[in-house]
Amino acid sequence: MVSEKEELVITKLKDGTVIDHIPAGKSLDILNALGLLKDKDRKIAAIMCVKSRKLGKKDLLKIEDFYLESKILEGKIAIIAPGSNISIIKDYILISKHEVSISDRLVSTLRCINPDCISNAKEDIKSRFDVLSRFPLKVRCHYCERTFCDDGIVVDV
Amino acid sequence: MNFKGRSIISIRDLSVDDITNILGTAQKIESLTSQSPSKTLNIAKGKVIASLFFEPSTRTRLSFETAMQMLGAKVIGFSGTEGTSVKKGETLKDTALTVAQYADMIVMRHPLEGSARYVSEVAGIPVINGGDGANQHPTQTLLDLYTIAKRKGKISGLTIAMVGDLKYGRTVHSLAYALSLFDNIRLIFVSPEELKMPKYLVDEISKKQNIDIVETRDISDEVLKSDVIYVTRIQKERFPDPQEYHRLKSAYVIDAKLMEGAAKNTIVMHPLPRVDEISTDVDTMENAVYFPQAGNGVPVRMALILLLLGYDV
Image (cartoon, each protein chain N blue to C red):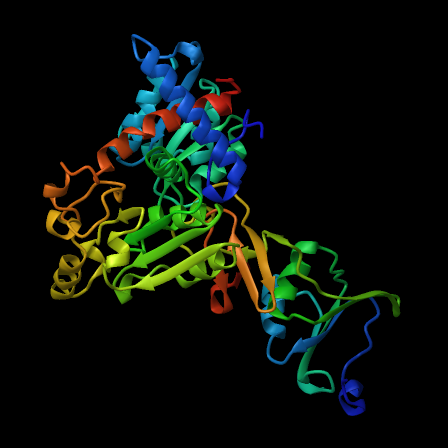
């Protein structure tokens, strides 16, 4: 939860997306993955390292006039910040709210770190990974068939 | 399982029934060709098969092209990219789409991992992977299994020792995985600590039912008495210290003196090329099957071509 005092400095979101329960320190990674770090015209509130009953400390993002409905983008958030919530707000009303999830197959979500993988060649090709396990996350590249976990899993930005 | 129109990209795509079907078809083909005066079967006459070898190959390309010729198919293609549009910067996709206008099937080898999978997704015709970098070489695995089944009469219930570089060798990775699909297999992995079978693979195949895995550094009596000794080359470039390479290399040499301790019916296999890891004095022993093993590539590849083109044998 954001404390009452902290809430006072953040304007209530009229239209857009709130991403809550982000593990502390991951909000900038999410903005980068969503391609919003370089978007100078977008109003974004990034609240970082606030107290959370669930996580101890958490980040929170409020993004104006941005509706996160792409499964690919949601997959990226699920990899960076598992357990986070996405809320869609329209005219101050909560339209939908759900926890991000990782599908069995991740398309255009991750980048294979194997330099010899065809998915890194100059070809018209989308990355594809099969999820072998979720806890801990372990994935296999559909093309080079290599298995990755931990630092080997890189979100495509 | 109907193979018509499918591609053979990875051993992981095949079930044990698929493998049994392919090996059974290869056996029939070998029997039919031995009865044919010309040693050929013109079953695939009128078909055009593209042999696209983006990097050098001896056994794989020659045995594929022999298989194509023995089936009566026309062969087009290249070995090495010199003189092709690849040198002009053409993408793999464009090369595949172009070749698919001329051919009924593509057999390819390419240095990038996953390249054959990609071509199979864009070309619209069956693709057989003849090796994609360090990743997969499924027809090698199938001819290895065919050799084992032919020499031993079965695959299930056998003890197979794999000796040498188990870390980097794609051949032993695929073969170990394929063997784990069969029942009551005992695998003995013999390698120096630095070249052990990757943990992810050992973990994965350990989960299969009825498989027994032993990892050791020594060519023990049990290794010599196993049904199959599958030897791989230890590559010099894997070692920063040349002295370390020479020490390890000499520890894993199969020679006639060592083979005195082997069982009479133990077979010695090798995917070739060999360098020093099997001494030439083993070549004339009954245990040595590595050259016939290479020869088995022809009926196995004939079987695959026919199955993917939809022919019955």
